[in-house]
Length: 296
Image (tube, rainbow, N blue to C red; front, side, top):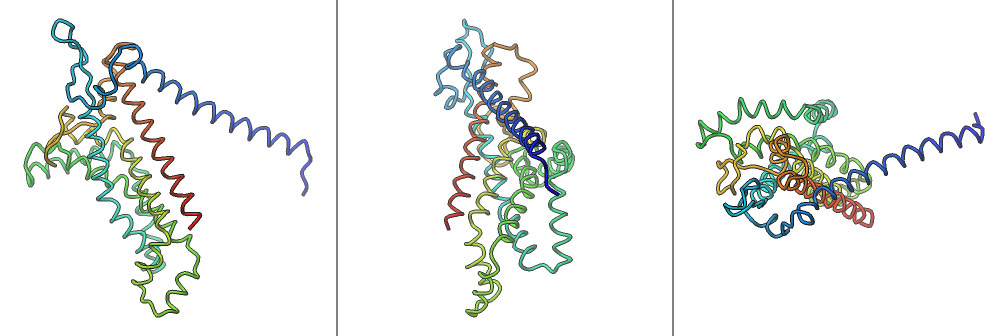
């Protein structure tokens, strides 16, 4: 059935309106967070070097005692440590699961494994945090030492949360490969594992790397589950058993107790701006990886 020209114009106009609304909302959020985040440096005259490199945190200290200090280095290093370690644990597990589901498991195994791992992505963050608080933290305290609230508990909980992302993207990348690659490898006498290791994984590397970057982006943005198990101590960790804090934890804990427009409040917005810039960097990295994958 052919549609009338007026019907197509109406549908096209609706799609354009929805796309325009999404663009306006995205730009508005970026402008709002940027305006709030830059107030620390433009209004309160805090140097970016102090915010990024200092470890001294006293945003409400009066002037007669030396004035406020808003060093965010412990938060930045805490976020980096928790996120990177979580991805280092989740990447081999997710990639191995993807190879098994796509190339090794029988059909019934594929039908069970992938939905089971994808269900992990649908579990609310507070459930992960509650399980980590009641099971993992006491286990770490009894068998590894320390208080249990630690960098170790944080990245273990986070690794389970980013595992479905890495697994799903890696599995989709392996499935998208042309069957000619596998058939050519078998025709040359390669075994199944030689084909997987030397042909399929290198051919799907751009998609696998994109999955890892997506998992890292998810890890940086996670707040609640990590906050419940890391101890939220403002110091740079020196071991896996030390309590730590992250940018997201600082924002969620301190934002309700600050006055809008104060230095303390503006610094929290600066942390939000830093997280936004990190997310934009991850998106650019994924675009570059995808573009490079198309050229391969």
